[in-house]
Length: 146
Figure 1 (cartoon, helix red, strand yellow):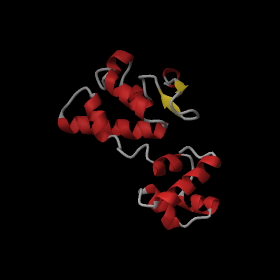
Figure 2 (tube, one colour):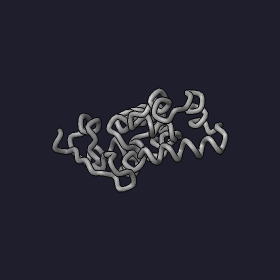
Figure 3 (cartoon, helix red, strand yellow):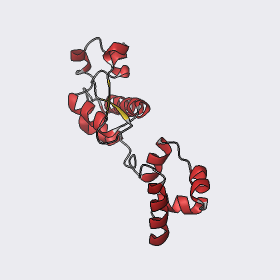
Figure 4 (cartoon, rainbow, N blue to C red):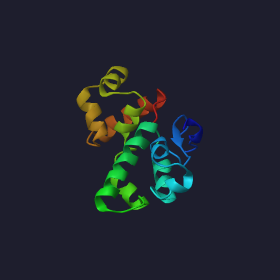
């Protein structure tokens, strides 16, 4: 099973890993070969997953959601449209990006000498422009992926 999985760094997001091989572990458990996997999920749907998601956990969760949505709607194989319908729209927002890299609100408050309310307002785009610029500049200088 593991021999069918290939990891490749994504040029769009250095340091993060994405699965570029069509035989996901979840699909490998359902399908005996690549041809059989294509009867479960279309290549276009796999491309959407691979280009949008960065971590194995994200891929597993969204593939499972897409399989469930496809089953409930009676659509087979899972299409790119079904995958796009289950993808989170905020997956590349500031808060999820920082959380993926291990920065919680408490960590950011301590590191940047701010208040939890300010960080939450920054995430919700409700912080005033001057303070937003100041915090973002501090985060960039510290090397955070923003």
